[in-house]
Length: 171
Image (tube, rainbow, N blue to C red):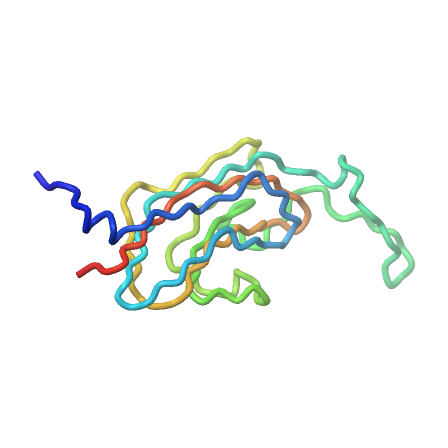
């Protein structure tokens, strides 16, 4: 049986990865949390959960604006949900190293498969959870948890909860 010692407690910091219910516009993203890992630190991803609280339909909340196109015709956007990437559901939470907010998350490299919630036929609330098997990241860099609205024509209300453990000196 192992005992938790004071040295072990001084060497670990638990940090939240969380966002209250936030409204994300279509094709937008929010950096939920960022953690800097320097040698010899380790980031242990313990658990994550994403909850789709509401899918806001612009046809029912009054936010659809119709302007004439180049031909002078007023064309309504499609009423069906359109996804940027069919594999990533309505929204996803991704872990990135060296994330650049000015560049679309779809064109940046994920550190692991994203946590995906909802599909085009999803009914809110929908929940997705990451397994409890911790994943260790030891490569130096800034790790960012990014929440992405993967739709082209829906606003989403989403909640994120999770936890990472920083091991300051794993020796």
